[in-house]
Length: 329
Ligand SMILES: NC(=O)c1ccc[n+]([C@@H]2O[C@H](COP(=O)([O-])OP(=O)(O)OC[C@H]3O[C@@H](n4cnc5c(N)ncnc54)[C@H](OP(=O)(O)O)[C@@H]3O)[C@@H](O)[C@H]2O)c1
Image 1 (cartoon, rainbow, N blue to C red):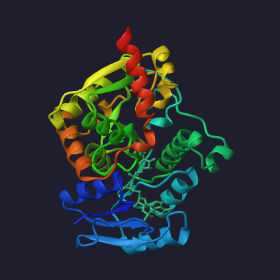
Image 2 (image 1 turned 45 degrees about the horizontal axis):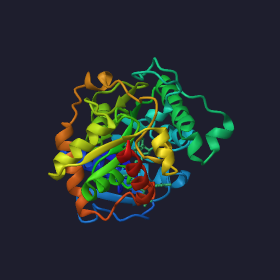
Image 3 (image 1 turned 90 degrees about the vertical axis):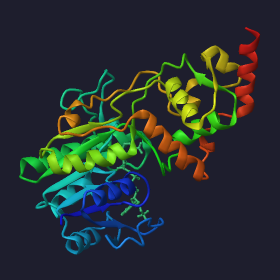
Image 4 (image 1 turned 60 degrees about the horizontal axis):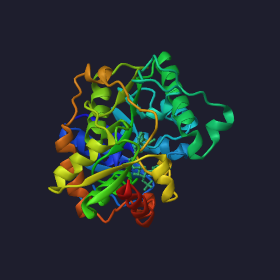
C-alpha cells in the first residue's frame, strides 16, 4: 500500500485530494493544525497528525509519523515553506507543490508551462502576507521546486487556475449560483464573453495524483477544465443544472456606472482572458470531468450548504438600477 501525506487536507482542494488518493487505494495521513473540522475523522484509512507546517519540528514530526511515499502540499504560501518541505521530504517518491496560475507574469493566451514568463519575487515579497504578492510567492515556490529537482528531489508543481466545486470555501461560484437560483434577471458585466479559466476541484485532485505518479521531477503542470466556457455560458450551465431559466443582461461600463458599479465589482470577471494550456497534464493521462457533470455536482452541494457568496454581492439594489436603465434603452 502506498502512503500519501496531504499537508492540509480538510477544507477544499486538500479534502478532494484525500478522497482521490483513497479512491486509488492509498493510505492517507493529513497534517494540519486541527482548526477546521476533519471530514475524515471517522475514516480509519486516514490518519491525522496535528501541527503547523510553518513549524520545522511539526513538519519533521509529520514526516516521521507518516513515512510518506507521496506528499501533496496544499498549504505552501511562501517560498521558505517550500524550501523546508523539499528538505524534509527529499527522499519521497513525489513531492507535489500546489502553485497557481497566478504565478504567470505575462498576459498571453494560453499561458504555457516553461514558455510564459513567471512573476519575479523580491526578498520582501517572499515574506509578505498580502494578496498582492500571492502570485510572486507562488512563482518563487515553483523555482524552489525546480532547484530541488536539480539536486535530486522528486519535486513537482501543479498550477491550477480558479478552482470551483463542492466545499469551495471561497464562495466565488456560490455568488453566481445564488443569483441564478434566486433571480430571473441577472447583470453580467461586459458582453458576457469574458473568459477566466476555471478548474473543477475533482480534476485538480486527480491532477495532483497523476502528477505524483507520472510527472517528472522539476516539471510544472497547469490544470484547468479541458473545455472552457465564458461567464455567460457558465451561468447557462448552472441554470441547466438547477432546471431553471435565467435572463442574463449585459451591462457595459456606462450602464454599470448608473448603479455605482464597475466590472471589478463582479467576482469571476476579468478583462483580459486567463487561459492555461492543459496539454502537458493531459499527456500524462489526466482527464477532465465534463462541464455538465462538474456543474451538477457543484450545484448539488451548493444547495446543501449555507454558502451564498454574499461577500461578493455588488448589491441587488444597485443591480436593479442598472437593469432599470437597460430597460429604457
Ligand atoms: N482555490 C483556488 O482557486 C486555488 C487556485 C490555485 C491554487 N490554489 C492553492 O490551493 C491551496 C489551498 O487549497 P485548500 O485551502 O483548498 O486546501 P485544503 O487542504 O483543503 O485546506 C487547507 C488546509 O490547510 C490547513 N492549514 C492551514 N494553515 C496551516 C498550517 N500553517 N499548518 C498546517 N495546516 C494548515 C487547514 O487546516 P487547519 O486550519 O486546521 O490547520 C486545512 O486543512 C493553496 O496552496 C492555494 O494557493 C487554490
